[in-house]
Length: 207
Image (cartoon, helix red, strand yellow):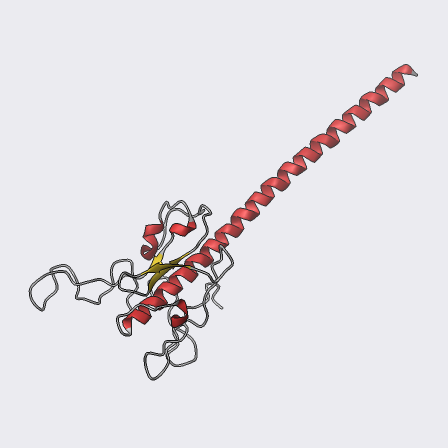
């Protein structure tokens, strides 16, 4: 009897240890799955941030092309009443996917107005390399708040009277890494929408 009881005790002990190991393993697998899901979700939000930021930057460039002035507010990109026929550079104000808010941080222009936007998120980016040419400045940044989507028109350098300096285009040409007013950057969505005068980037999902 004592031998059988000892065997049962050992079997119960082995069963307990097996269950404990299974619970620990399951916990580790769930933790790894949660991390992978979180990383995947963050990458998707990064894509949305790049799309929204570049769309706003292109809209600012288009607004600047009509009068060489920056918009005073982001609402000016929705309806520009400076001409007899209102112009719409954006159909709607994009949400910052990192904060889930339309409250973008603004980059003021020295001459007044808004020349760019950026996210308020201090989260470290997953993407650190291989940005599009227009976003090369985002390389190895430590937070999304350092991804500033800014439009800077190129200024004419000193040269012969009436001529741009050698190797530099005339005033009003876009700087490297900036979209030409009226033309979206390569890889960025172009104007669209059924209404005349409406310039709206395409949806990143192709819809």
